[in-house]
Structure formats: C-alpha cells, structure tokens
Image (cartoon, rainbow, N blue to C red; front, top):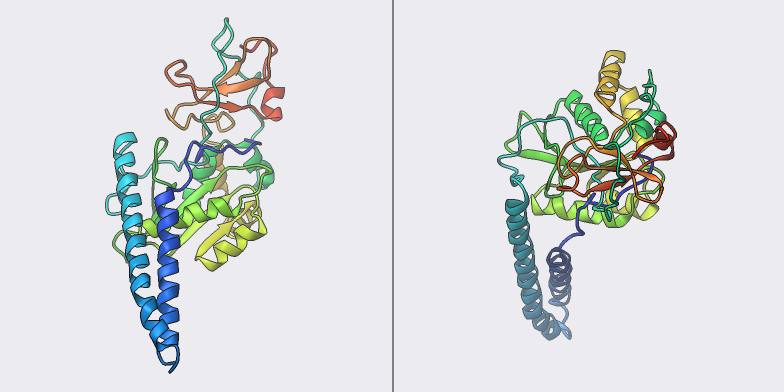
Length: 317
C-alpha cells in the first residue's frame, strides 16, 4: 500500500482513562519527590509534610484510572474478539499488519464483482524499498514476524480482528510469558508520529512489559524517535528493517522474500474479515478502490495505489 491508513487501522486512540491515569500518577510521584527533598529543610519542612497527602491522593487516583482503563480494554476485547492475554496468547499464524480504517463505503457499480489486475506485479528478486512498496499490510507483518523468529524468538500473532494494540507477541525459551511486543505500520510516505508511539507505550505498560519494537515501512518524526529512545522502544523504520534483513544469510533473506511474496501479496487483506479484498469502482466512474469480498455484510474499504490502478482493466466494476 502506498498510502497510510488510520485504523489502528481502525484502532481507536488510547483510552482517556489511561492518559489521565498516567498524568495524575506522574504528578503524584513528582509531589512526593519534592516533599522528600524539602523534608530536611528547617524552614520548608512543614510544606514537605503538607505535600505528602495530596501526593498520595494523586498516586491513588492515577492507579484507579489505569485500573478502569484495563477493565474497559478487557471488556472490549472479550466483546470484539478472543482476548490477547499475555499468559495465553493466540496460536502462531502468519503475522498481521497495518489494518485499514473503516472508510465510508462506496457502493460497487452493477456488473462484474470487481475487476482484477490484468497481470500480477513482477515479484522482486532481492530485498529493497520496492518490496515494501509492493506488498500489502498483511504480508509486511508476516515478514516482521519471520524476521523475529529468525532471531530466536517464539512468536504469536493473529490474522485479523481486534488485537488489543499488539501485532506480534515475542516469547523467549528462558522466560515465562511474553518478553516483548511488536507493532507494525505499513505506511508509505507519512512518518510515524509521537502519538502512535505514546499509544504503543501505553499498551506495553498495561502488560507490564519494558521492551517493545515499533516497525514501519516509513520513517519517524524527531519527537517520535526521542520518545522511543526514552521509553525502551526500538523504533525500526524501512531502512532499519532492510539493514536487519541484510545481516541475515542469503538463504534467510530468500526465505523472508518468499514470505513477502506469498499468495496474492499485492492485494490487501480485509482487517475485519481476514479475506482478500476485491477491486471495486464507485458508481459514477470514480477512482477504483479495494472493497471487502464480503460486501455488503462487511463495508470496509481501502484506497487503491496508483501502481495497482495502472494494471486494472478499464472495465473494472
């Protein structure tokens, strides 16, 4: 995909309970630290004592708000899909990636069920930026999962649906439960900002994890890079991922390339249904787009890149 999508790809922003809880907790800890500094001062000792009560209140309220966030997240995961519990993560599958937003559906025109490319794109024979540009979000996540598996991690992921903010769970043979989580963003052109990194850090904190990797085909803003460095997040951009792949053996690189080009690698997957989308064209001769094959039951759509539109038959529906 050449254009980023918002979703989480459909994913909503972090809960206000989590954001406010973290803010209030940090405020309470700050007041407590200040009271500790002032406690030994002969003239400001009374002020230090006065600060401790509101500090405890702030810490308690912050913890309560974060508990509310955790309960609401668990309820939503139970309602929308099987919960991704760190102690019982889903069974291994091909990885999952940037999921598209629920765009306003455009009704397909009457006629064929959607035109298909006249011929599939030529698959690259070596790794480079063109591979990331050609593959869809689902294949990108599969490549990331395979890359971590080659590094010795046991990986867990799911193909579609609600994921609780985690694309890939990383497990170690020497530890119980996940040791880190991975978030994947198959974006082209638009850099990943600090907002996305803050949401990911909130997910890490909610699972009690201090390590996480954010992988994107795009780049990061300066603020996002600084936030990642300060909070134990490994921020891998497209160039960084290609650098890691280049360190693999030739056989491993070819294995990753085979994962990237598996099946109809150019055709996006519906983030809700997990099935390949179909080429559609809105009534009135608008630009072609991708629509879920389960339409009208599922109305998820994705914009079509110029490269994909160029190989569409003129009679596409």
